[in-house]
Amino acid sequence: MHSSLRAAALRYAAQGWPVFLLSAKRPLANCRRCPKEGQPGAHDPQACKCLTCHGFYAATTDPSRVETMFRLPVRLPMLAVRTGAASQLVVVDADAGKGGLESLQRLVAEGLCPPTAWARTGGGGIHLFYRHPGRHLPCSQGKVAAGIDIKADGGYAVLAPSVHPLTRVPYHWAQRGALVEMPPPLEERIKAVAAATAGAAPAGPRLSSIAEFPFPDRLLESLIRRLRDAPQGARRVTLYGCARGVARMVAAGAIEQSGAVAALLHTAITDAQQSERDARNAIAGGFRAEGVRL
Image (cartoon, rainbow, N blue to C red; front, side):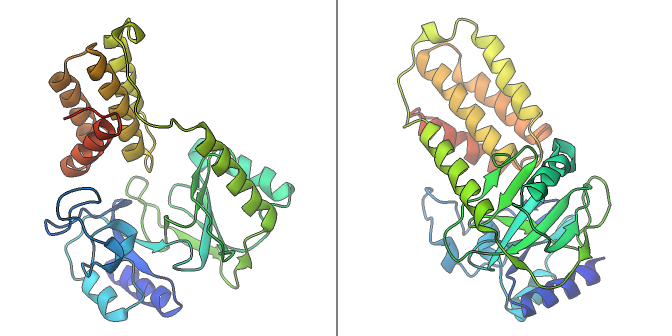
């Protein structure tokens, strides 16, 4: 499988698709020389020369860099393409486990997802590949329809013949060929839901009072459960959101900080399968967003 992934990566790169490696569907952790954005020593990820750091910023069409990537020790390697303007790709990801196939049928019936090249995922879902519209298009997770994720600018998608780390079923192309351009009605819907979501987002950290949290233990338990049940692909953003909730309770004096952070960290590593480094960074980011020192 390793050799077939390498061969596929070289083929994708030759057709202009910037590819990079994942480990069990997750980007590889940055090396020690490459701290994340906002941390001391952070640098422009796009200009970084590391082969695996900064997630999709490591994606490349250079065959020599691709060859070098595949000489690195990577646990459960998977192949991914950087979506958006960098590859001129938009991927509509229908997740079978979240009702995505039913949603996709409705989108097809509405004329939003015309036939194009598509692949079957290792989880039983579908990836539709469209040409990027040439204008900024944000990613979207479950906003266009239930179980439908849009992989566009700032995103990535797993490519065949990667093997799903849980089902052990390979991704495979069901229909190759020319890609259809992103349908304007679908582009409009993506941008509409993105605008609506942005409009509903909180403006920033706010002061909390202990009266807001009459049952802090129950709320903490709820946040931990939410993190534990978060679907793969949404766990880091869920951890960040839960950390913000915990930070607000800490700021109000409703809970003790060290114990709550320890509970978040334990759940993130044990149940949400985050690396300790990624988990600590997400928690720190959530506390920072609420103006609470960690």
